[in-house]
Length: 187
Image (cartoon, rainbow, N blue to C red):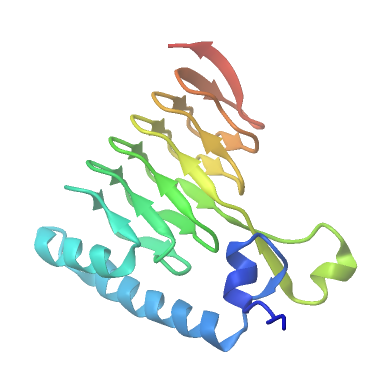
């Protein structure tokens, strides 16, 4: 006997899925409510901010900090390490796992996307979406306005320049910049 996968399982397996599925809509609503609380919490109220992040994210490291406003899809598929810092105006579309290491710093308006859509117009018209995991190593600096695309891995000790669009994996110990993002030099 075979059982059909839920839309959630399809999403996490990188298969076409419907985001309008009731289970996914309920999870999105939960995240929206937590984000509303988070984004309205006073900046000096670090205790409340950390409590909300612990409730929202799958894992939150020690002294992780995100300056509001912040937005994400579900939150529960985001894992951030110790001493993670994200400046204001950032977005993480976590329709699949987004794993971020220790000592990662994100400038304002960084966007991390696990979500994407089919390139086939006929498939897009079905309303189905796709998602691929994103992995960011430890001791990474991501410059302002950078976009990290679905399925990308960024290695440890790497710097991503401001305004870069990271469409492919970037190795450890490099400075990478541009659109599309390319390795500029080793560090």
